[in-house]
Image (cartoon, rainbow, N blue to C red):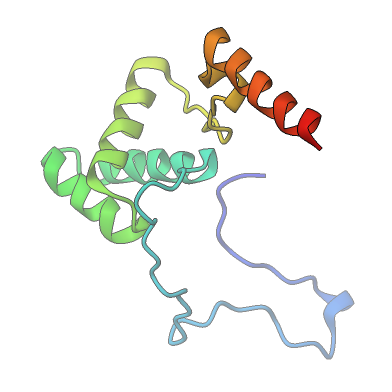
Length: 131
């Protein structure tokens, strides 16, 4: 399982079949989609950002950091700050974290203190007792 990009075909087993060859004149790219503001960035997207960053650094090490971020923005559709945070997180921890998809919401019971709660109970009980 090397990094060999050549597609080989078997000899006598593949008689009568077309050999598998990559077509160079056909380009299939998916439409660019931007990540919506306030939405979570998945760990898969973060890994993709890190891999693109590593590839750009290995191919052109003298490229400026701002140019690298702009190139990653064009390729992924993520925002500048998201890319910067992802790269800095990877540089410090050598990993990327998954987002916490559950937002902590305080329930109504937690928002109201004891005094207000007893007042509400008294009001509701008085309504039921008047019936």
